[in-house]
Structures are given as C-alpha cells and as structure tokens.
Image 1 (cartoon, rainbow, N blue to C red):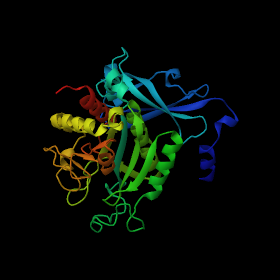
Image 2 (cartoon, helix red, strand yellow):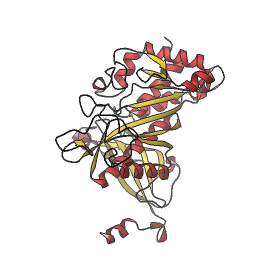
Image 3 (cartoon, rainbow, N blue to C red):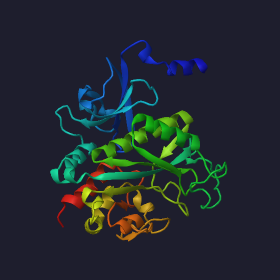
Image 4 (tube, rainbow, N blue to C red):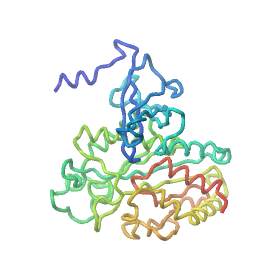
Length: 356
C-alpha cells in the first residue's frame, strides 16, 4: 500500500507541464454527481480556455440511447485537493449538441437570472448551511449508531466532543481543509443535533458562484467519504421519529439590505417570499414535507412565518440585523438535497425583480 500511496502522490510538475482536469457535472436525478478526467497540455485558470467535452447521457438518465451525446461546458475551476499540483476540478453544466441546455441543467436558468441588471446591481450574497448525514456502508444506518439500534436521545451531540458523541470527525476535517485548498469559500463546520449528522457552511459567495461552490464542496465530500468507506446522505429526514432532519438554510442579503435602512428592505423581501411560499417550497428539495413538520427547529411546510431569532420560523432574522437596522436574513425552508442553483436564483428573483 505504501507504493500505491507513493504513486497517488506523484508530483507531475517534476516531469511534465501536462495537468489532469476532472470534469464534474450533475446527473439525471438532480443529486447524483458524476465526473471524469482528461489530460491537458498545461495549467489553466480560465474556464473559457478549457475545451468542451461530452459524455454518454443514456447512462446518466439524461439522453436516449439513439442520441446519447451530451456536451459539457466548463463553468468554474477549482484546485484539485486529491491530485494537488496544477491539477484542477472543473464544474460544468450540460447541453445538447445543438447548444440547448438539457432539462436537468439548472445552472443555465440561474445564470440568466443573476445576469439580470437589476439583480447584478444588488450583488446578492449567500451563505449556505449544508447539513448531511454520514451512513455506515451496506446497512444504510447513521455512523456511530449501534447496528439495528438507536443511540441515546438528542442533546449531547450538537457541536459535541468525545467518542460517544461525535462520529466521523476525520471525514469532516479532511473535507474542511480540502475545500479551503480547492478555493471554496467554506466558512465553517459543526456537528449537528442528530448523531452522525454534520454541517458545513459555504459563503459569503456572490450570485452564481454560490451554486458552483456548494456543488463542488458536495463533490469533494463524496470523494472523501468514498475513501473512508462511508456513505453521504442528503436526505432531509434520514431517520423518522424524534430526530432532527437535514436542511440547507440559505442566508441572504443584497446591497440595499446591507446599507443603512436595510431592515425595511429585508421586511419587504420577506413579505414577497411569503406571497410565493408554495412556489418556493415546490423548488426547495424532494421529501421536504418529512422535515418541515413544525417540530425539530422547523416551521410547518404549509405555513409561512418569520421572526427575529426564531428557529421555528420559515425565515429567521438575526438579533444583530434588528439591532443594526441592516444585514441579512436566513431562509430556513430549503432541504439538504436542494439544488443551490435553483434556490439562490429563485430567492434573488422573488425579492428583487418579482412584482406581486
């Protein structure tokens, strides 16, 4: 195994200018990440200078067998924490050979929304709190839980320390550092309320880059868990009963909200979100009704509410925002399996350009 490690850790720049680019895209389910690698003649930092590529869409549920070619358009570059050196991870979106975005390409529409002059002028910032659950491979049961049984009730696990309270910290810390290495603006991590559940935060990130960074952070997490022989679940309620679900709370502000008098702008934005509650819920992740029950720090899925420092509301405003009269708010409704391209662009569209 030591020889294998030596080979994996070869520094290519000692002997060649060539680099490896890992092209990443989202498969047909909307949550399955796919990737494949190619050799390029030298280092690249601008996605526009990367070649387009293709893949077999009939094998990812994105094209019929008789017309299976799907084209990858490189959109964002990150440093590769696995291969290191000048090697890169490339976040792509997918198109037909005629140049039309395929139906599962949610980035295309999001980019269109973020390029709207009214939205671009407001410089929307996002901070996304991505919760997830680590599962024991083969038995689909949370890491650290007794096989076929349950741990003690929730209470000691949130931000907990100790072998009986914290499960999978090596994976989580590896992921944290790998994201920083890659150039993702990961701002923190913590153990969550349910044992085996964790959270990382991405942001502040502006516009479309928030979606790119969350997707690549998810990809890196899946790769690290693969090495550790552990499964990552983004299910919003992986264990039924008296256990917390998993969300992707989306913190949001615009330039007007961050400036003096911003609290009035925030209140107007929240009012608009309330008017489109059903449309947002429909786009905020599969199975969210199992999580948004009005219990376990959630609001009921059918009712829109907001409050200052209220973790049982649909939208929470922080005490500092209220005190300063400006700042940001947190949309607590998105599920852990939401598409960040959809959620970030929809929040911007509703709060900035939608007219009730």
